[in-house]
Amino acid sequence: MEKQEIVKLLQTKYKKYMDNDDLEGLVFAAPANQRSAIASFLMYDVGIDLFSQMSEIPDRMLQLCDKVDTVLIPSNIKSIGPNAFEGSSISKIKIDDNSPITTIPANCFKDCKNLKVVILPKSVTKIKEGAFRNCDNIKYIVTPKRQTRSEKIQVPETDRSFLQSRLAEVEGTD
Image 1 (cartoon, one colour):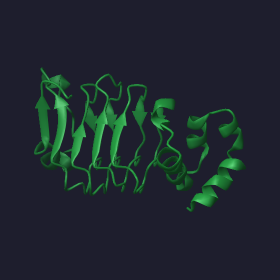
Image 2: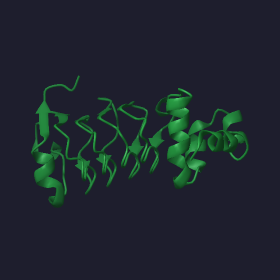
Image 3: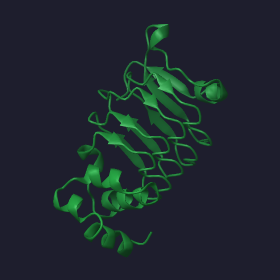
Image 4: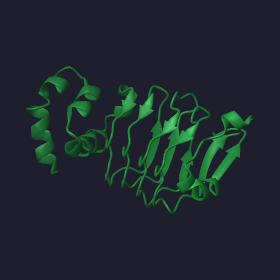
């Protein structure tokens, strides 16, 4: 989607959201096939920090986005949708230590070929199947040390060897 097309959509179809500074509403209102282009434009071309104005990251928000590098997900984000970053150019993801996010959804980072480092908070207790599928360049998935078996991150059997070979528990994530 070209920038001119996005600007036209923002000035017409999504004008009410722009006029009311309802960027979260705008991102959720956009159909999945436009969502990534609009979010990418607002974040990387206009310079708006969408994550600070949202409570969740919707499905396919930055799917196939080639402008994303490092993503810091703040504590106001309560959940991440499936395929949210699929196929993007992301190289590092850090979810805030105080985040309430408990699950990394299916295909969330699928096909992120540049992804090398993932930093998860203690609140994450489950990684769904395919969340990191084809992310062969991941070096580390860092998470705070878990004291009991019930605190351990649940990973699907199909992804277990890949994820466990990269999982590093540390005293802190900063």
